[in-house]
Amino acid sequence: MKRLLVGALAIAMSTPSLARAQETSACEARVHVLAGTLDRDARRAHVWYWAWMTAGLALIGGQATLAAVTTGNTQKDFIAGAATSVFIPSVLLLQPPAVLADAPLLDARIDATTVDGRLGDPCIVLPRARELLLRDAHDQAFATGWFAHAFVIGGNIAVGLLLGLAFKDWSGAAKQAIGGSAVGELQILTLPTGALTARGLGLAGTF
Image 1: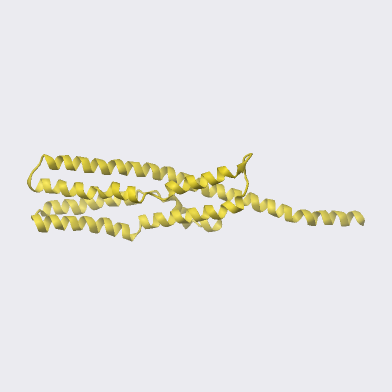
Image 2 (image 1 turned 90 degrees about the horizontal axis):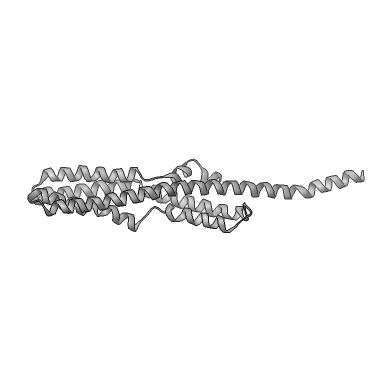
């Protein structure tokens, strides 16, 4: 009887410790899932960022050069194209994808608290990982939302109308409205949205 009581007491005392160990292990696994999601997203965003930075600078330089060696409406078309192309690198410089900073931030937190391959405070890191994922998802939702599309299309139509109304260059106006909008839309549609997808799948809440 005494042995049964001792065994029952030992089991009762070990249950909270076992539960805490399981919770810690679950938190660590979830932190690594979120960190991996942000890391993949950041790598893709880095490629996207520099590809569009290069494209934007090439469009500015190329059209400015052509404007310098042409005249008339053709010159005005290239001037307008170069001017609107300035928005590509400008937006990238002023508002780069948030995940480019957030992914290294989370990795640094994990590295600083990892000892012998084990994360020291996973259940404390987990809320921060969720917060960063949600912040990046919000940033991506804004960058690909209706406002971004309206700004790109509306801005290029406005420049096109300027060419048409002020200079009677309706051919150039059409090129600017359609071509400029197409380039802007392509930039928006190619933005990596891994954090936004993860939020949609419920990772920020489930994990």
